[in-house]
Length: 77
Image (cartoon, rainbow, N blue to C red):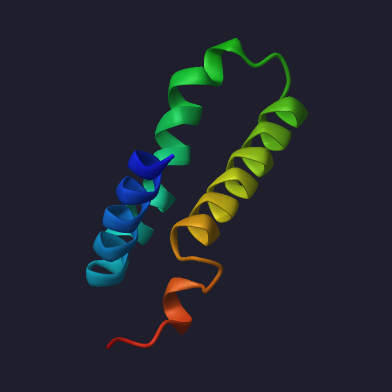
């Protein structure tokens, strides 16, 4: 558990120093995942739902990294 917290603190400090890089990765990564998985989807509706769930996952992940405070509302020390 201590190792996970230490890793999350490092990830959080990186996200605080480079918010646009982290945001760019979050915006590009779901598209890459979908382009790899797209042939396996049967219908457009399932593709759209998967896209929505991936975005929800990344929003929750970003919220967890930032400690509950969105990166764009964070004050730099």
